Length: 368
Image (cartoon, rainbow, N blue to C red; front, side, top):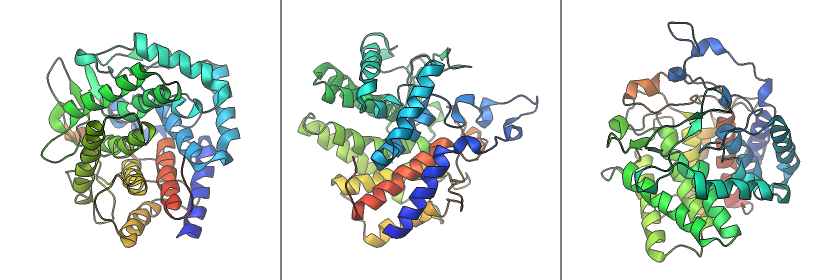
């Protein structure tokens, strides 16, 4: 499997680095009025690597975890984006710093943004990180008043915890822990162990209670990453709580796999399409938990290979990962999730690269 994985990893990586060579078919995103529609997944920030937002943040994170082979590309990407002018600070634009904070030349930038999170990040009731995102362009903000979304765990909270450990800042670490616990409190469905897309404090609502695949994947990979980042800084009770949370989710997820081995974009709705990026994130999280000893569910080598094979089946010969849903706004209506266009996306490449790199590391090497 290692030789085959090396080949797949290489093609996925190179397609990610040259993703802007893929022409964007905007016709898919048009609705009745012929305008590009967010309800079908059109968000300008999401296409290619020539932006600074969460898709690119996930992209360089996937490259970074593969090792120093990608360091020069990452640093050149960052330099180019900084030269163009950084976007507004928000949940999603923090994501690139999860990677860049490891490079000395970006230490000051990471500290500046972390201090902003500490002092000026808009908060919901109960001190949650309000899910503010980029607006119509990179210099505007969409407030999402009194909303917390599951994405925040990966996009911002991992960075907070990692900065708290790096600079031995207890306040930052405690804030990161508080965010994980608060998001779990309001987004967890206790009956299934799955997570809702979001919570609105004003409406006291989970927006129709949809179990979105990619959203759940941020938990599946985010929790074991958080446990690893915060090793030695979590109370045993908190660590046990998060490990149980993770295993309860994984147990249900394994029972919801489609016939082809991936997961539906609405996890509990087999009439919704299977979605590759969320499935890749889930597989990455399961395998990382297995590697780190957090997974208490037994998986045989055959089980692991089946998970990996179901993902590699979605990689075209040129390394393009197919079956990826475009940007997905929160909705009360599960049918809206089914209307999101599927097409190659930067984060589809990155999450697949992450999953395959972890799979390779199970047999061959350590992962950072």
